[in-house]
Length: 66
Length: 223
Image (cartoon, rainbow over the protein chains, first blue to last red):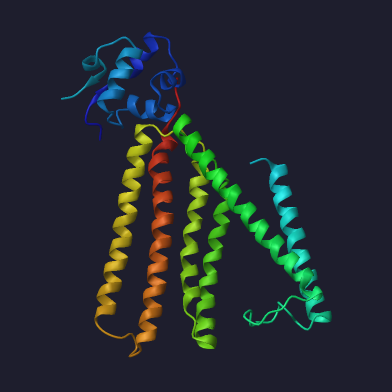
């Protein structure tokens, strides 16, 4: 069960990035981005910051914790 | 390593083995088994007929040293590549077939009954090489933070299982001699410890693969 909501897919598509491109930018595998988008993986603070910079959106809008 | 390099190593090995076999044949047929049968080297005197065996022994040793140098070079190159690219080492999943070498452990039953030798039982630990199959499947994979997390999880789970195996063995063994024979107890401990080591090697690779690939069936890969 996801512990949080992830809006990464929306912001990634707004930036017109593929999962592969985003993965390369933040230095992870494509599978990790897939899991993140499904909220199946809780990222480290560093990865969350890197992703937020890559998609130009604040962390708190990408990852919504209850 | 390139395929041509492997061929060269293999051909060199075959040549060295053939030379050793030829030298053995010469020593047995024309040199009174010298340097083939056990000898007292304190009273040894060189004879010209010993030359083929000495050359063969020298070549075998040089070949082994060459293999060691290659192994060390490969390990260093792998470590450098790992530090540079942060990817898992390149490995052929077919190396998992080496796991069948674990059956050599059964030789221990024969060597124990024939010569009272128990060391072949440790060959059961070669079953752990089955883990190469899963390591090969994860070959050249980027080790990102999710991979590292999964690796820690897999190692922890594998260690937990093997700890339980060792604990249960200790419980059984501490009750006293197995079947009233301390030698049987030693054999049982050797077998269980070897299998525990193999299980640790195998499980950590298998679980890492499973954790990494779990739920991937429903991963649509949408972009």
